[in-house]
Image 1 (cartoon, rainbow, N blue to C red):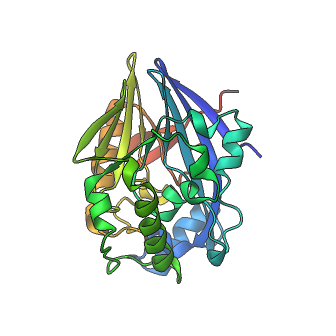
Image 2: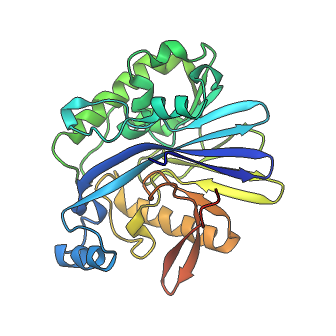
Image 3: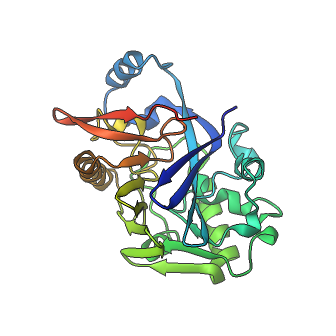
Length: 288
């Protein structure tokens, strides 16, 4: 299977790595709209009506002598029966990336499918003892007493998310590097807190030599271009998440920069165009 795709942003090397896919109910794409409306969109996209495969994309960035892992994939949670995800460590090895070479980790947020790879048995021991993990302070604070009143997740997910975030904070607390709104991780690599999806959700902006790329984490989903107001089942503040999505997509359409997001189909590299009152996803032609 194709599992990695390379992009160059000026002097910055970017590698998109697939952590696999998550099969989830299609209601997760927009739980605030009628089932018939979701079914129409799925039919128009030639997608199955009941379960939708969400890609899980992770990014490795090399800039200024630093090797930065942006998000860490799902890891392993057998109780949720997600055998097609959690491939990150194996695929990093296949790409020739040693875990010990990673100097920094940036977390867009602390959902299980973004931190779980760091919780796989044996991984922490292979990481550098001076590894820096950058995450918004608001994100760490949120998971001390997370609010799930506005989500619409499949059974079992809230408990699994709580447990993973708690375990992650305990195991890596000494390596966390908290920021409030914005932080430069490496030359041309800046993380910005957006909120919405979670209170500390962040995006990573890359800029070098006139080229730009944004890793949007979970701010953008496949359906979000045509229907940015649809509420995703994993959003803790869905109304704010929709506002964040629209602002980000407008900015990306204006700048013409490239976009990568966690759950867009692999390799998820493309650009955004305005389409009436909504947007249009323009994937790149594969360069190989």
